[in-house]
Length: 242
Ligand SMILES: Cc1cc2nc3c(=O)[nH]c(=O)nc-3n(C[C@H](O)[C@H](O)[C@H](O)COP(=O)(O)OP(=O)(O)OC[C@H]3O[C@@H](n4cnc5c(N)ncnc54)[C@H](O)[C@@H]3O)c2cc1C
Image (cartoon, rainbow, N blue to C red; front, side):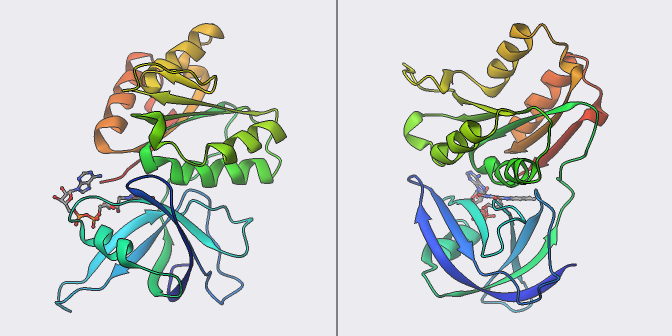
């Protein structure tokens, strides 16, 4: 059910130079819920009431979390939403509207592969946490792309999930790093990681469903890669952060 409510900021942590983790209170209505992968609409205060400013941010927490609604947000230079979020402090009230969006897990006979870049990890974190919390028996594989190792965050969280659940693995793909010395990371783009996986398992790409999230260019280039590898478009779900 889509509602608008005053959420209180209860945690704000800086994850890297440009990325913040925000936790907000949930609506009072106990019946309110969302599906992992959906987003909330932030009402950004605007000087002109005739021109409301709205920005969409994916929910990074999972419905199993009954204490907060969490977000992973990258601040872009001179962005209206970014400037607003940068200045938020503990206790501030943020008007949130939601949930909205269709980028949710679609049960299928195939196993899913999740491919994210940057803060595109937010809905993936929600979906993967939710699938594991609800004891999904699917084999879940995540490829997360960043440019440099120093930009990484939440890796411990994914590592804990992978240790606790045999059916979850993740690979960090660093596209610009010169030397990669971490067993969890490979050098290259997420498509490179995916290519390795498919060749190691001698598995046709069309054996999987794909969930893509990140900037427009990344989503389009991975969609092209999948189409060139004969994956039917019905098996590819995506969210573009535009
Ligand atoms: C469904 C959906 C879910 C989203 N979820 C998330 C999320 O979970 N986390 C998240 O960080 N973002 C997310 N986004 C993106 C977010 O909604 C904003 O578009 C983004 O934060 C920029 O908003 P802004 O108001 O700060 O910048 P704007 O005021 O919109 O833009 C200001 C300037 O910055 C430029 N700009 C905008 N974006 C970028 C960029 N990424 N890099 C460089 N320059 C840029 C613009 O071209 C413009 O010149 C999502 C978008 C969609 C559509």
